[in-house]
Length: 218
Image 1: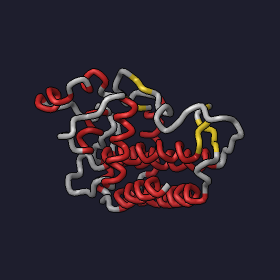
Image 2 (image 1 turned 45 degrees about the vertical axis):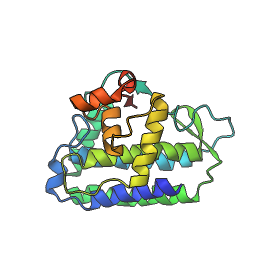
Image 3 (image 1 turned 90 degrees about the vertical axis):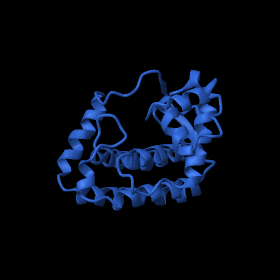
Image 4 (image 1 turned 120 degrees about the vertical axis):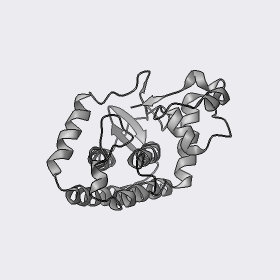
């Protein structure tokens, strides 16, 4: 719960620090500008609120690792929902409105997470998870999207170190193999999720992990 809160607070602070010009820069998500990614974060915050308000008495069907749908192909940005996000982001026009909406909904999602019982069970995407596992998936989501947000903003603050380490651990467990110890957590996440290609040296170091990555998480 604490790691969810810190990761989410850091990501929202990074958005708040953006200049108006930054919203028109590319993000680390294929086909999305920074403004599109911020709009997606608003939808994510709504998902947190909706899911935490959808309790279930059924047994969990997934956990923080099996929650993810793994694809063999990278995103193209042509998915209808991705395209809808682009149109919705453009409709805001003024970046300050995007910031306001994210702060408004995002603050509520953060408060709801603090009030939730980690052992409780909730429904999302036709699956059942414990609250703790559901929020753990969002530590990964927030961390990866924080990296996406600052992909072309070299002076921006990185995600919290604890969130990077936890996300790397989760990705390694999903892949079933560890990444080389020489890889910084950021590089392990970027290469491991296909956000960038490994260098020749990194490819050689990956060893058996090269067979398992990249993992395209959805």
